[in-house]
Image 1 (cartoon, rainbow, N blue to C red):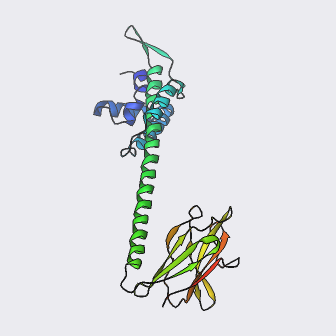
Image 2 (cartoon, helix red, strand yellow):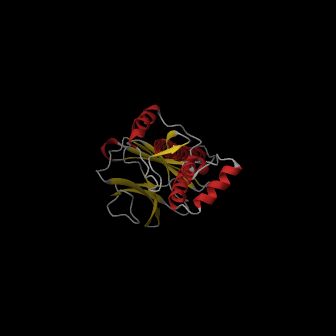
Length: 250
């Protein structure tokens, strides 16, 4: 195998597809060929990304787009290797083959990166589902507790709100019905009333008019709860007059 042949082995070396003899000869060559050494590092990094993409498959539309773009992918060739090499009377074209390998790896890397992204999105969705299940279980535990007590009050514009408290669980749930949506950029924030000091108990969903919310934190010695309109994200303390105040049931 001559030097020109060794130049074409960067992709196979990066993918560990050489025999022991070919690997040793290529490594001796790459020690003195910076172009090949650089190309091996780039292709090895691409191959490493492919190893991450094992749990999700991209859609057909993305595959079609990548396949169409393969013909536009070109890798900078080592300046030491001519386009064609005459060997044993046969005109051999090396560069297009290396471009094809680079294009294939680039396409696979694109698909792999998408698969990793899809996998991460799936994991996020699963974690959100588990969190929703935990909240639902906590709400159910309060509502069905043997010592659960409730108090209902009429709110503005025909809306109503009910607070349910379980002293044994030290938690409370607020159930709203037909509440007007807050102004744009605003959110309803819930508060515990600790002898006149308001303690944040979480936020309501600004896109819902009827909702069941597990108040954040323990009831402790709170005597009531309130609702205010706050900037999106909530406030450390109330910044507006309460739209509702409810005493907690004993």
